[in-house]
Image (tube, rainbow, N blue to C red):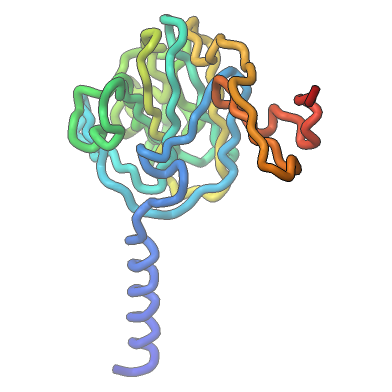
Length: 240
């Protein structure tokens, strides 16, 4: 084996090895999905190249992979329609997505049970000379149609699904797949629907405890909070 052949072999082996790494970062598996709520755009600036299992879908013959995918979870607090938009930073980026209802289920059931699918969009421009829509944005919007759009950019295809009705008390999982292996990231914004995915319960203190030296006080609230919504200097709390 000459030097050039060896270098090519090592390069192919290295690339294959890197691509074969399973998705394991927080947010890149169903069980470690990122909690989302409210209407403030969620920015996903960091993307990773990794491999994942195909998800179980219905309505398309295409393979819906979870390679390079991030997962988001939320609870519905008010029944209504769900609207959201995924907008790539780069206009050439293609993001596929699938929404699942995982109420009472193991999150990993999305890999084997296609009845959990609520809405699916695999739209992509590809080599279509005159696509009806650009690659990005995509999502569920008031002007969207249908609950399933498969791959490709034929005239009847669209990156926008109709807004599905979600039900209070049920839990949902949204997979966003980085199909074009972008490094630019995207924003995810929940907008346009009548449903609420924001917990209406006001935050309050349920418990506080301190060690003997009283230098550290641990507090427990009645609901999960975003860290950046609390003052870093602790001024949200007072000790009487």
